Length: 232
Picture 1 (cartoon, rainbow, N blue to C red):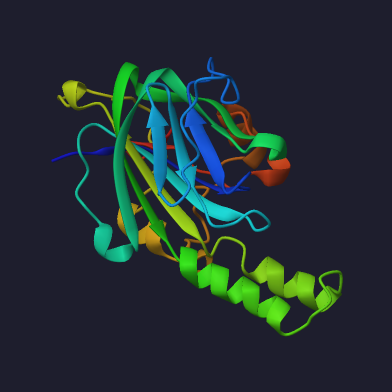
Picture 2 (cartoon, rainbow, N blue to C red; picture 1 turned 90 degrees about the vertical axis):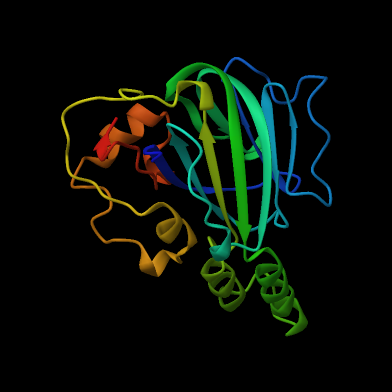
């Protein structure tokens, strides 16, 4: 049975209604990138995976996972699903365009090679309707009431991205030591709302320390990297 080696949970600000997963050495804005995923969940080329969103002004929630083989399907908890592949040199970055880089140089256990990708999305239409309803009520977008209700919508649109190298699905792949006892259920956590996240999901580790490992700013840190039940 396949094992999850890594799980990262972060807020992402889509730029031009998308965010991009790619090798750190790749410039996502360089010529030759994938076509924007307009009307599609993903768009890919050899070294980039672009995930389409319906949002530009509201943060979405991304759960990114690495597995040692094809993970079990969990599409029942999601509205949309897409499959693709991307070439990575043992690390990945998540770009938000002008909003910055959500993650830079996250290390993967699978090393260099082609990674299969499975992408799930949920609540895209729900969030679009609820955000439009704020304007239909003729609220002033600069008012405290509008901003408070807008913040309540952050993380409602959600994504699960699962990556694995099928050629390396073997005993010992991604093995490591020093367990700290984290246990997160892949589909259940990814599909749940923020109110369902475990209150101790950081496992008691220092936020600044983990943020440094992952290459993210402490001020925006909402991530956990679990390798075989341990923090990498």
